[in-house]
Image 1 (spheres, helix red, strand yellow):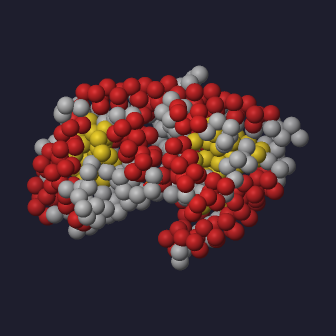
Image 2 (cartoon, helix red, strand yellow):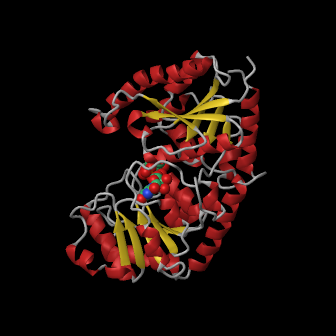
Image 3 (cartoon, rainbow, N blue to C red):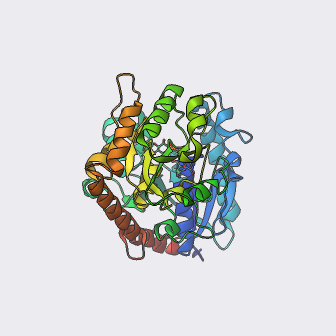
Amino acid sequence: MENQRGHVIVLPYPAQGHINPLLQFAKRLASKGLEATFATTHYTVKSIQATTVGVEPISDGFDEGGFKQAPSVKAYLESFKTVGSRTLAEIIVKYKDSDSPVCCIVYDSLLIWALDVARQFGIYGAAMLTNSASVCSMYWQINQAILEKFGCLNKIDWVFCNSFEELEDELVKAMLGLWPLVMIGPMVPSAYLDQQIAGDSAYGASLWKQTGDECIRWLDKKPENSVVYVSFGSMTDIAAKQAEQIALGLKASNKSFLWVIKDNENKLPVEFVNSIGETGLVVTWCNQLEVLAHQAVGCFITHCGWNSILEGLSLGVPMVAVPQWSDQPTNAKFVEEVWKIGVRVRKDENGIVIGEELKMCVNEVMDGEKSKEIKRNASKWRELAKKAVSVGGSSDRNIDEFVAKMLKAEG
Ligand code: UDX
């Protein structure tokens, strides 16, 4: 049957740093005329707000509490594979005789079993990488332990990467012919890149409760480029010792700060909390895009999760890189040495960033010798990111090619 309207299922791994870019991709496909259905777990489905894409629950076997209910990571992944494959197949069957049968599954590259489901129905399968292309190629070349994730990349129809060609140009050339790699990012809502934030402009998924517009009202009172924004993403819990040193560093820097600390119970020294006053605001979760896009923010102390890096880079915010684990040290290296949009902290022998070091890095990025060059580069990359996703830009063209193929595909 000739497909009336290409229909793509987008399947995220159910964590904040994965849902955001995949949901944004689904919205972008829908804006280009495809039907997109976002299939996510029962536990996360209630946090999805999307008017232009369909939303369908699938099961990971832990519908009440999600991942936290599972006895181990291994048990969770096995259950997700078994129950997820079955419920994903049910969605495909549901649309089989409609006028828009599913013709492709775009799945988070962690969920390789989705490719088997696609093949079972004879439809396209595309993986989406939520790390940078450089990090993924490194894992692919050197790390046997996660080979399974990458083992099938040469058998897939497309490997989408949340990055853009100009950002990782050498790598993209080096991977030519090895993977069907397609750069489609940054998956930052276009409204933020255009600085016209309104309506359905956010990612549309927050697994934690955001602090209303308190952050924005507070930022509104601060001068341009004067505030340090601190966040370590959704997965990293920083130790009390490290939190104490960050507090010392922020105080010593004499800058205003907005600090997201998800689990701040008893971590912050009482004297620090009592002395904050109007200088700082500590919250448990915020709308990070809105904060980074605010003109008062002049520096981003980040754990270097890939989404945070892309968001900071796309919004032109200079960074202090405090990487923790997995891809973050590599991202930090690129921030400091390749894109030159920030500096990376040095840790002490116990792996802690002491307050004095943090203060020095913040001052270097905001007012120090390197600050002018860093700000110039940050503006340059902001423009390149915007160009990549604007009409005719490298990522936009790549998405158009995929959409054209989907519009012709058989469901
Ligand atoms: C994880 C890994 O840590 C990271 O290294 C990997 O690249 C992706 O998966 P996470 O630690 O959550 O992700 O960091 P990040 O990739 O930065 O994603 C966090 C997301 O949460 C961002 O999109 C950010 O905008 C959002 N966020 C964060 C908020 O909306 N509010 C906050 O207060 C903090």
